[in-house]
Image (cartoon, rainbow, N blue to C red; front, side):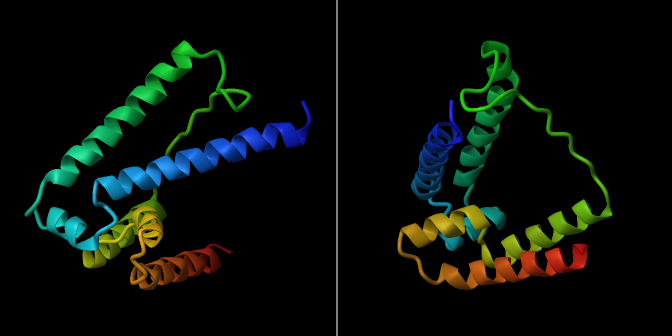
Length: 140
């Protein structure tokens, strides 16, 4: 199979997965910073069910799919994704959490929110981009 035939199904699968993810975030109201902030202030626990459901789906997919399929539908083989905790991981996750807690915006829901017409999220995405740029320059 040629490289173009291999990439087209992957691009289509990525598009469908992204659209499904964005729809799910929108349906769960995670694209509204005020809903996220009320969850983080322990005033509304609706997003607990959303996040718990997402964790359950991912856990089942990571554990069961490799047992059912010999190889991924659009890949060569299943890979392990080892995590390494160090000072930079701890600092990055703390900064992410503080930013999320201050403005109630996470990158995925912010992009999905733009699709719903919430243009004020461009400010948050600008801050996220600047933070990513600063991290990239620091890592060099």
